[in-house]
Length: 93
Image 1 (cartoon, rainbow, N blue to C red):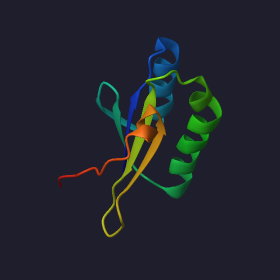
Image 2 (cartoon, rainbow, N blue to C red; image 1 turned 45 degrees about the vertical axis):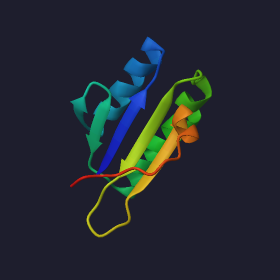
Image 3 (tube, rainbow, N blue to C red; image 1 turned 135 degrees about the vertical axis):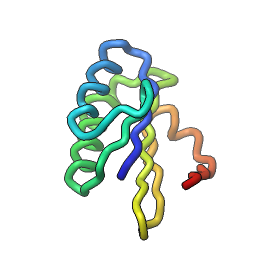
């Protein structure tokens, strides 16, 4: 499973990104999605971010992807402003 959380200032881009994510998973909170992970799904999401959303980011926009699976090392992928905040993340299970 992956958790995708985002903070996008443009109403239009935020709505489009939310609709895009809803194809793959379910909304947990306003800007947080839980997505059943597969390599293909994650690659599709990352390609969409890289090609459509990343170039439109303003100063504080960010998307963070948390990889969560049993038996694998947990990984965090950051885009936009979140790239500047490379602190350790604690995940409680």
